[in-house]
Image (tube, rainbow, N blue to C red; front, side):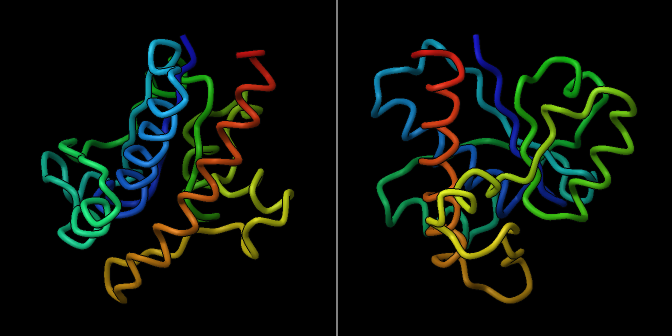
Length: 157
């Protein structure tokens, strides 16, 4: 089982969108049985809340369903997940501080897509205050494609 965790600040905009898009791509590839996919936040501001209406709306427009609830990152997550993907540098720093030693599996979500030049940035902007959910979706989609390709190569699936 390959365990993938997406992390943003509140776990209502970016990381649930990434969780949903990545799970959608995994399912389309017929690989769902190989993956455990989840998301969480570095804060507990929205614990138990459903995803932001902007996230849910853009996912629905792209034919992707999502019913997850916000939860905070735990030390157990860092022990359990094989890939821990931060949406921006601030969240990456927070996760690394919590992780302590082994940080090889903790990276910026868009890192692979950026290296492949399918995106022009390393951070997924937070649409909570500014909107821009469709732009975030496009970044998340490209990031998810690149991540899935990398994981398939790493695990030969």
